[in-house]
Length: 398
Image 1: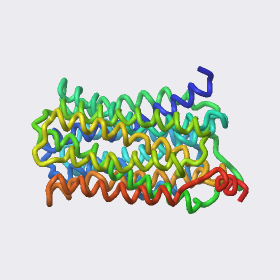
Image 2: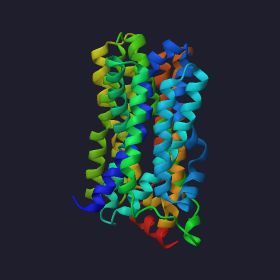
Image 3: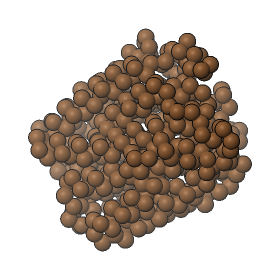
Image 4: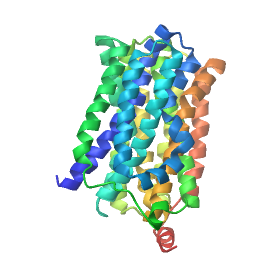
């Protein structure tokens, strides 16, 4: 593996560590809610708070990070993740837990915006497609590792020990990132620092991706609670099932990467490519009714949710590969990436409380109906974001 791929994989790994902070809370929240007296809605909010910074400031942060430097942003982000994890492990009530989670949110935002920009800077033009396909899987892989390892740690020690361990992992990533980021991510000066505004297609891609994350994070965020409360699983088993289901999306991402390589990045939202994308959006939404059923069987739910996520993983692999084309030019990438992060974070923030509210008022089947509605809207927006080779060339020339 050459030096550029070593750095690309490392930046991806830092993104995985950031996403693991979302997965860990999904697995641990049933235990935390019991000890700290959290309601279902407040518990879901704690899960989603990691995304609050991105939901409010993703687009702005993209430009600021471009000016301040992507390397300092990545280092500051991992530092906030480390401090937030340690602080959460010491929280004695909901207020303190939420405050430390907000700090962790700031770290997550800067990390997940800086890391893909560093990947794009490091990768050669021939490497970009594969690198972006790899990056598209950082959330499910992070969720899987966070949920599985935190569930195991909670069984061995306690939820406080699991949170402290997550903070220490982020601290280790900070130390190792110092040499790995040497020579990249310098501050951008002059006219290039401002970049260009997001295109219409970038807006459609970003909003569609937000609908996807509403569905995906709503499902994965509330799945452990559903499994514990309705299917009779313990916290360890619920975390394991959630982690495996999340990791199953990597299979879909791999298929999307192969498809993108086969088509050389062209016509990603048209013809057979759009049919593949549409299937990966709609089929998981229909399968969700087999997960949030009225009389869930643990084994059946586990099989269905793993298959659901394997299919769902195709979509983000195709969507991230469209980012350079919808941005219009390299100068448009920071704004387009920030916008994608903002709407992805907004969906992640909305998803778990929205699913929890539906389940609390009308039952878990209504949460599945909510996921279907978000998926259909995602499908319509991805059609609006459609880029063919000719439109991409026109954008580049504009």
